[in-house]
Length: 314
Image 1 (cartoon, rainbow, N blue to C red):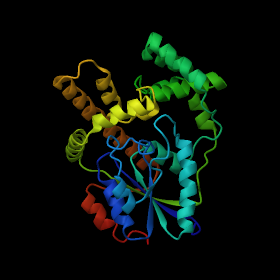
Image 2 (tube, rainbow, N blue to C red; image 1 turned 180 degrees about the vertical axis):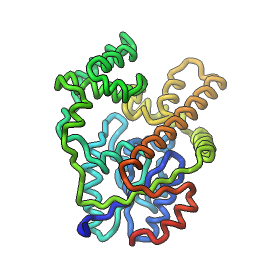
Image 3 (cartoon, rainbow, N blue to C red; image 1 turned 45 degrees about the vertical axis):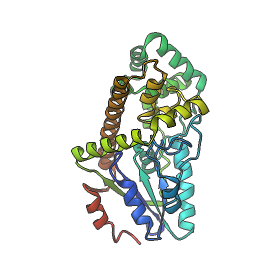
Image 4 (cartoon, rainbow, N blue to C red; image 1 turned 90 degrees about the vertical axis):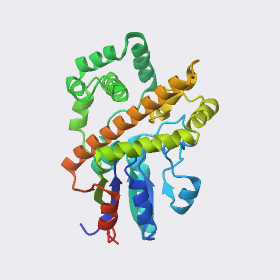
């Protein structure tokens, strides 16, 4: 398979140090960076997403940052299409792409392909599902899913709102469970690539400390002001996919309250910390799942990764 194009995937949970490591590799001159982050695609969402600053991006350019507004939607299928195009262009320039980020759904879609014949989104159906949830509660929607697709009911939790909406949407369009369609449909795996998968997996206690420090800095440099400006500029609200980025939903809830006391602010910060830790936990779970199907090299510290990757590829 010597004709395959090498692609380096550098994964890890939030605050693990993967971006700094990718930037160090970039300095060698043989690489270009592609962001694999579902939050960094949004313009003007900078502080809460820990987006590299303009100065950092000038030194270490990242593809797929700031490509849409917070009012738009960016799917895993769109990511795969854009990433494959960029990978080919980067190799055309004689360099190797490093895909760096923590959105494991995007990595999974790239590594395994996507079911090719699932129907496109039907926003009328989605709105109807959400409206029913508003009337009857998400537990009722979850029970409806379990009645038409028991396997999806086993895989999802009632809190997996977007996945439940998608599964019910597919069933309402096709009359068949999404799990059945996914198992039957071919995969569009990009066989022309040779993926080299690396994961930075710090000790969880250390990661929690890093997350806490990152969030503390986030509050200090004006995250709430950023969210307030987004609410004015884009009418940002919790129903938009962009607002699902950790911290933003909690900040929106706080800013909409009449009570903006110190106690209420501390509660919001605690909720943001909890949500970020839960995100990291889900990222660990995704990584373990991906490791079962694909060859991975894992590092527990950034220093170990730096030492082992010094002679990476070319």
